[in-house]
Amino acid sequence: MTETIFDISLLNDEQRMAVQETEGAVLVVAGAGTGKTKVLTSRIAYIVSSGLCTVDEILAVTFTNKAAKEMGDRATALLSGADIYFRFGNRPWIGTFHSLALRIIRPLHEKFYRTANFSIIDATDQLRIVKKIMHDLGFDDKKHSPKSMVYYINKWKDQCQTVDYAKKNAQKFSNEELASKIYAHYQDLLRSLDTIDFGDILMYCLEIFAYNSDTLKEYQNKFKYIMIDEYQDTNMSQYLWIKMLSQGHGNICCVGDDDQAIYSWRGADIGNILKFENSFKNAKVIRLGKNYRSTGNILKTASTLISNNEMRMQKSFWTDEEAGLPVIIKVLHDSVEEAQFVAALIANKYKNGVTLNDMAILVRATFQTRAFEERLLAMGVPYTVIGGMRFYERKEVKDAIAYLRLAMNPDDGIAFDRIVNLPKRGIGSTTIAKFYDIAREQNISIPKAARQVSKKLEDFFNQVDRWREMIGTESLKDIMERILNESGYLAMLRGSKNLEDEARLETLDELLSSLHDFSDPAEFLDYVGLVLDHTSAKIQERVVISTIHASKGLEFRIVFIPGFEENIIPHQRSIMEKGELGVEEERRLCYVAITRAKKEAYITLCQARKMFGLGGGWNYSRPSRFLQNLPKESVKIL
Image (cartoon, rainbow, N blue to C red; front, side):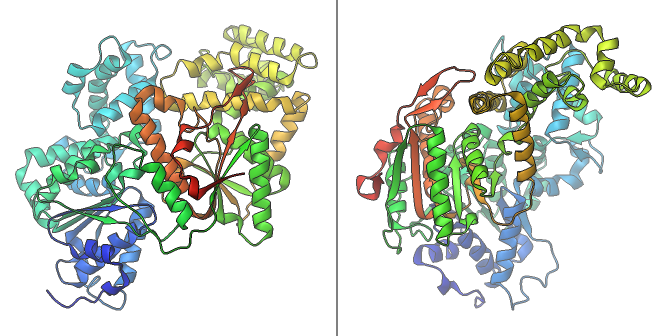
């Protein structure tokens, strides 16, 4: 071994061990804030600078292109001043699972019956193709959701399950059985279109490895060292891909944290990290316990909380940071008071020198954001939303507003165009184009043109007229609730099997609750117009509002975690679908949320929430069961 150029003394003892343990299978269990990325990039720099291999003999896998770029940039920076990293002129194999597998299969396209220029379809095209197949096969896409069909196809591919497997094992007389029939036609159509989807990339790569031993051996020999980031988030096909490639030199290092496994809903299998020692022969496990992010009280609160999970690897955390402020728990009356409390604290912290970018509100469900958005807007505090659109920019909210605009103004062509076939009323693009032609010829509005020529829309326009008659005599909330019900919009969402549509129902419930603050539709529509105009302004410094899922990997000086109530945290759907496994994943979500904080963390909960919308009345809340898991000595109840 040549003398290393990389300075290993910059690492702590556990990190140094993880970097220098280069041979065999190694699992680095890296808790939040323990320097996971530093270990990965340092390991690449150490291996290359020590002469153990060339840069293109390392396979380093991440989950996002951004993370892959960061990993490459940081490894390069660690080797600055030495030409050993660059002189070979080869591309480093650092990227996402899909980008790296695609790099392998692209030259081998004939093995899965594609041309060299095959394309990759996105989710929108995937849905469009499934709808076409359903139409061709005579399946009713109103009775059976196309999105549900796509969900099952993607799930089978993530689990590396073939068409034959799906047909044999799909639950009888269910959407799953229908999806298994569509699966075969879907694959055939993709082949005829000379395209593949994202799930195919790993599936075809695994098939090529399975049936072409020379190709598998070539890549097994090529990659002397394999490194996987966020290993707890891998699914079955990703696990099998890693497993096959690592059987050459046997040098595989996986970095992850089972306590941050929060993506089971998109196919991630926590069992991959929990069973690492069984999956890889003579595996070594190295635990990183020193936290560089959070104060003592924040770290202890999060660690004590997550220790209540049974499905986890045992570990302990510590920090050289002072204990700092306790984690604050505040009980408030309702979501309005909750938003006022959080916004007032943000304003106070900002006044005392904390930048807006260093403060974040982390929500479990997207419907929670509205109250915070409106309070921050009222105070003139800029914000940005991560992991979702701003409340009034969400599709379901814009759809509902379009219905209201048409009820207010029978000539509103933009609103009409948006919702005329939502839900489906048998009005296609050709018919809509005809409406536009008539409107131009007669110099009238699009809706007037449609009223003249379309018998299919008679009932629809009668509904719009009835809704208009309610204006001035009924409350805005009652008008909107009637619109959403009579239009069939709510029935459309309730009939969907898509989890996004469940979240949309929650958002509409929150919208209906908010309408009590407005005296009439005109006032509300003016307000929405001003909100959208305000939020479009380009301002550098903003408070972050994010879902907890989207906050993973981020850190902030101050974090607010609202909605610490049963059915929100933990979320009702997660408990209903997965039972105790769901509770444990929800607890991991709380752990992720708390560990985003460096100096201060605030947990809030409400005694009641306004549920005037789809559920009706007040929803009196119960405190989250997770409050019982927090250490009394590290928290303070205001």
